[in-house]
Image 1: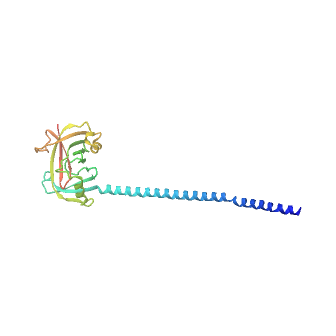
Image 2 (image 1 turned 120 degrees about the vertical axis):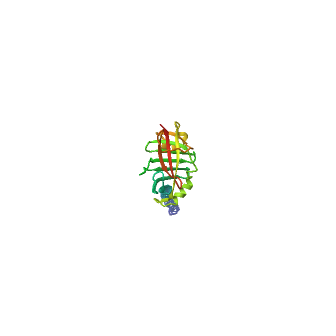
Image 3 (image 1 turned 180 degrees about the vertical axis):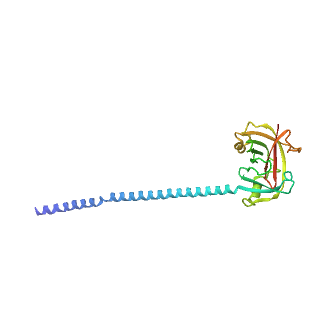
Length: 251
């Protein structure tokens, strides 16, 4: 009997040891779960950092793009004046002043000019557009609230780039060198019904207003006489001299 007991003990010990080994291997899945959790946390942190980087980049880009566009807009807006002499207005050599607000759009190739009410003479306040793409000029007589359209006169109106260079070389609010005035006379010919043919810039200026075509009068007449015609004057400058534009309509 003792020999049989000795033979049974090793078996029991072996069984116990095998159970011990299985018990030691059980914690391994817990370690795997911890590793997966750490990977998930790291992934979430990296995603948050990447999202923050993207949002920061968008904010910086938006800030500089808006600032740059605002700066470019300010560089193309001018408030300036010009000093000139008009012997037809006064026999004395009196110096007159003319102020304008000018916006030049180089990429769109057009100029927009606002002429306020003058303190002297017979000149109406006006908004003017010179569209070099369409080859048209539009005058919005603010006093009459009417629009007048004519072919652009490139011999008088400087193109946007050259006009921008002229004004950019003059300090903000400063006057251009003293100069002279020329006169041009136009007559009203017909009413414009199709506004879209004038282009988007002139369309926005004259939409909802009575709009007429103009024709330049080659033979000079006494434009200040208003016996048979009613004339309104707009004084402006898009060059180194002042232009007195007389828009006349038969009574």
